[in-house]
Structures are given as C-alpha cells and as structure tokens.
Image (cartoon, rainbow, N blue to C red; front, side, top):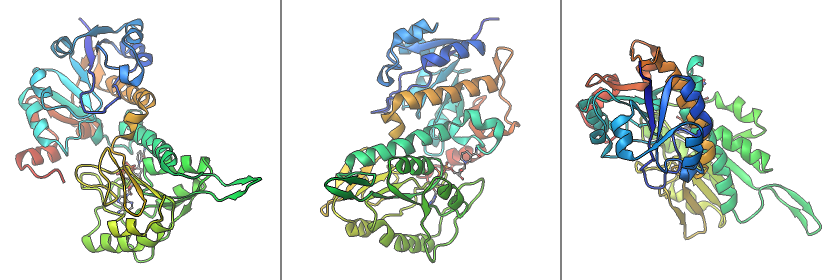
Length: 386
Ligand code: NAD
C-alpha cells in the first residue's frame, strides 16, 4: 500500500511568514507513515530554505503539483478564496481554519468533498489533546513577542536601573486578559524587569498571575466572567460598560498596556475606550493582540498597523504576532501538526470518527457535509461571524 502524502503549502495571507511543517519535523512525519511534499519557497519567510526540507527527505513541488498530489494539505492560517477550488474530493485540509469566522469557506470545502480539520476547535483541557494544541503554542509565542514589540515602541527602560545618573524607575505594565498569551506576556515583562499587573474577568486567573511575580488588578464592581471550559463568557452590555469604567483609571496610570482578551466565537470585548486612551500619558504604549476586523480590545487599534494618537499614545494593532517570530512559531506549530497526524492515522490511513471527543471538536467537514454542528448552523444561517 502506498503511503499517504502530506503537502505543505506556502501561506497566502498577506504578511503571513509561518509555515505548517519545519525541516526538523519532516523525518518524524515520515516515521508516522507519510510522504512529504513541500511547495517551493513554503518555509523561506520563516528561514527554512527548500534545501533544508529536501535534505530531510521532502520533495519540493509546485503549488499545482501539491494540490494535485497531496492527500493531506497542511496550512497555518485560514484558506484563501481559491483553496476550495484547488482541492479535490477525498483530500484533507488541516490548519487553524477559523471556521467560526469563515463558515462560507467551510461550506465550499464540504461541497468540494474535502475533509476540513481545524485545530481551533480542539478540546484543550483534555490531556491527550495537549500535544496538538496549536492555539496554545501560538498564543505563547504571541504573548512573548507582544512584550518585545511594546518594549521596542516604549521610549524608556523596562527595568529599574541604579546608575551614576540616578535611579530609573521601572515601566509599569498592565496585561488585560490572562489566558495563555496574557500569562506569557506577564512572565516576559516580569523577566525584563518591569513592574507588572495582570487582570482577567475570570477570578481563577489571580493565582496564575501572582505565581508569575505580577500582582492582580482588583476592579471593584465588575462581575465575574467565568464561562465554560476555562474560557470567559460574553459580558452583558452593562457589565462591559462597568468594566470599561473601572479599568479607565488603572489603564491611564500604566506606561504599557498589553491586551489579550478574547471570548470564543464572539467579538473581542472592548476594554480600553478612546476616552481612556485620551487619559493616558504621552509616550504610553498599547499593544492590542485582539485587534481584528471585528474590533479589538482597544478602541483605536487598527489590525496590522501602528497609530499614534494626538496625546502621544502609540496603539499597536498586533493581529498576527506569531508571524513576526516565524521560526519559533512554525516549529511549535509543526510539532502540533505531527501530533495530530499521528492521532488521526491508523495503519497508513486517516480514520475520521466524529464520535471521538477530540475529532468532534476539530473535524469541520467530511463526506461532503459540514459535520461540526455549530459550524453547520452558521453555514445554514450566515451571520456576521460573531
Ligand atoms: P482566550 O484567548 O479565549 O482569552 C484570553 C483571555 O481573555 C482569557 O483568560 C479570558 O478569560 C480573558 N477575557 C475574556 N473576556 C475578558 C474581559 N471582558 N475582561 C478581561 N479578560 C477577559 O483564552 P485562552 O488563552 O485560549 O485560554 C482560555 C482558558 O483555557 C484559560 O483558562 C487557560 O488556562 C485554559 N487553557 C487550558 C489548557 C489546558 O488545560 N491544557 C490549555 C489552554 C488553555
């Protein structure tokens, strides 16, 4: 029986520098029973040249060849509009496909007979799923990089310094949202010597923030927002307004604010309003990891852009930080993909079984249908992605 082949595409989203498989993981993908095809130039933006893949045993092919021959197409980001037409029935597409934001693309993949597997829906609290948890691996990278981006834009030191020219006070950094990215940011800012505070609407985050050497920002009059599965729930409009109000003074007294708050499947909550940004000191920096076309955590953030306000606040819409540290992000992503390939394949074949708890979360389309119930509902009744 011939082996299944996996194909690694060159990402097509503007500015995307990551790649789904890196040379050091290619050998292990062979070991799992797959042949490996790599589109020419797929890894070059992440500093993985074609030659390194070829040395690891992969075949370097054109994009057309890859779509024609690969049984499993590996990608990082969501498919572009041409992808469903490039794929054929029986193929599997694996990536962070953002099906909640792209139900129409999922419908098109189902119609093309493609099995779409999206790591966004992984049940992350299951310990057997953790090696495949690409949301966590990418959020860790993003949180780290957010601090470097902030430190670069901030015109002063992060650490406290005692010098012959006197004492330099440390930067005061506030991290809003203490999930995976927020905790990575808190740890990194603390290691750089800043005075760090963290806040999350889930009260459970307090212990995690404090264990990293930061203090928890207590906000009076804000409801607990713990939801299902360790995630936050969507706050009501009144709760969100109360939160914005309570956050305003705290945000304004910090030099650097890094925002990472998300609620799965919903628009990011607006935590830092324009009015609050106007209260901040000149030279302050906001890095908004939630910046997106659907809005972000900071009112003035523009995804992929840096805005300097009239009162001298730099607002960075950091919508894809993992792509700015592409070698590290791709390496951990590739390990997640390897774990997924190992999980889904048996005796050289892919076995799709949506009664399995993990597969029920990640298999979006199969056998010509959208099999994931939440996505099927969106495909049937298109909404605005919220
Ligand atoms: P996320 O990206 O969905 O959200 C980031 C953070 O924003 C969360 O901590 C959330 O509580 C917070 N948030 C949402 N609305 C907010 C608001 N209005 N104000 C302030 N903060 C707000 O979260 P994530 O990073 O994917 O992690 C979510 C949870 O899953 C965490 O509890 C994390 O520890 C847990 N998790 C567990 C595992 C595991 O068990 N292996 C793996 C990954 C994540």
